Image 1 (tube, rainbow, N blue to C red):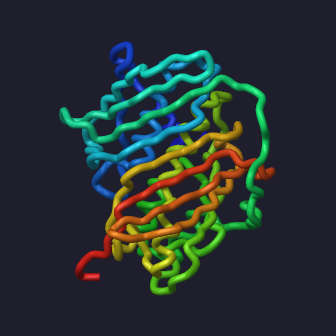
Image 2 (tube, rainbow, N blue to C red; image 1 turned 90 degrees about the vertical axis):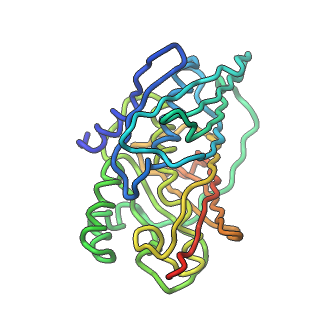
Length: 288
């Protein structure tokens, strides 16, 4: 296990301060606010800590309310909405400086047999044939920006199947993108941990497709400003976050200063594991 992954796992290992109250820390980010994927993953872990281990999450719905302060702890307050025979529902509010910054609702389910079908996995290159972030980023970004981005994502091996937005500035193309990802190290056999780590990664690139449609490079080059507004995920089948996962993303719409991204996450052998939808603020700075 790498030092970066060990640090991320430490962030997800929340401190329990009361029966349904948990405290989390933050890590430095590219922007002066807490990374949204971190808050979502920590909130899901807090909810999961109040649910029996045989009930993994099957969905989450979240709203980002305020920018988080990376220098202050985050308190996660869990509300035990319902404990049914098959499903468990939890609501989590993340609080900093006395104000809610994030709200999550999550549902958990015991395993059961049922009808089976799925959308086929789209064609994608072999992840091992693609350049790593350390190989790709310095080719397209200023050295200091590339270094910060590599450091921020060091816990994850994330590889772009096509040129990312900041490598194709000025060239609009189809609003679709693919990345392969896995953690940089093996993980324990804890389904909640694997789902939390996929939740963490899911906020890294989902709005890239919005930028591709307009030839914008994004936050890394400063030709747009933005932030996540809401985030929803459905977990269909078991998966491991320490094995290759294909994140197939597209943007069906952008309007009114907002952009919508939707995606599917597949295991390398073609099983549909997760569906993700996110909307974010995507604004063009006046000077751009």
